[in-house]
Length: 171
Image 1 (cartoon, rainbow, N blue to C red):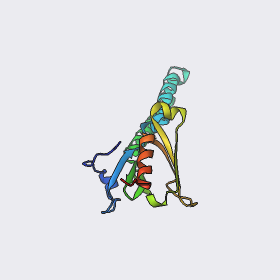
Image 2 (cartoon, rainbow, N blue to C red):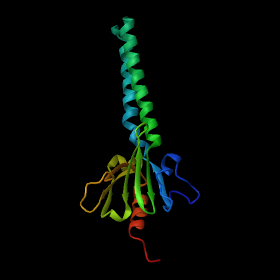
Image 3 (cartoon, one colour):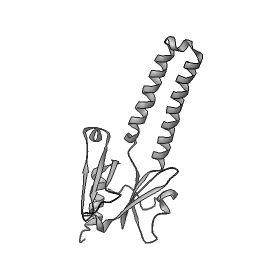
Image 4 (cartoon, helix red, strand yellow):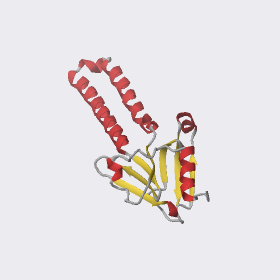
């Protein structure tokens, strides 16, 4: 199963890191389940702020303003996390694996396909329910920056695709 059709192109934020001879195979974002924690925090803090607003603390206008300003800061933090998620990509090319992340400070991690000596994926119960997994890669006994990629969507298909690139068939 090809997750990226031949006509698709990597986003400009990723394309600048591809070499001229590389052929893009897969470009994906991490699974949106990575945002479950931030969503829970925003909703929990909204409920907490609503409850505090209906207590005797709300009689003090300054305390009420502080409660809602703190919630607004949590909301701004959530929007920041969503923006960061929107620019984070995992790219598999014909020659290497790339992971790009960061909104202001850009970080690009890569591993040549030829250096991958062991690769597996893990799926928790939540990962099986929501459709994501974790890739764990090893490279000739060395510590690599790209050794673990969490919240990978379609882990079975991606695993087979990467293994197919590492060990190409004869036909």
